[in-house]
Length: 128
Image 1: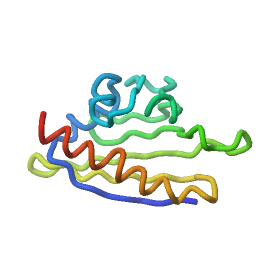
Image 2 (image 1 turned 180 degrees about the horizontal axis):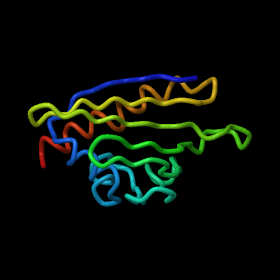
Image 3 (image 1 turned 60 degrees about the vertical axis):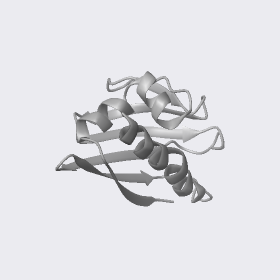
Image 4 (image 1 turned 90 degrees about the vertical axis):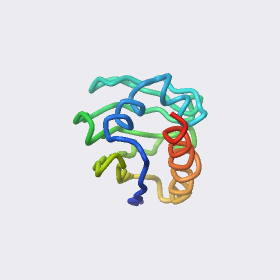
């Protein structure tokens, strides 16, 4: 199962990229504890260990690609792939999230991205 969702955030692509890959900022931005790195090959956790993954491609300020899974994945499920594409325009950034190779029942993750990431991210950057 795959999906793509987009949102606009009032922040630069650099601010979003750096916050996503910084443990303290990612935690503040989403409200769930994160331990994350800005290095390719590094393993990360987010949302109080509900999410675990690995950075597989990082293009500063424009693209983040990660292997990604939650504690809801079956041990036989392969990792999914999460890709964020950031396109900045006049101090606002369009964030395109492409989530592929999810388990067949993974449609609920789409709502989770909206509720637990996009909404709090917008508030985080407005208040920053």
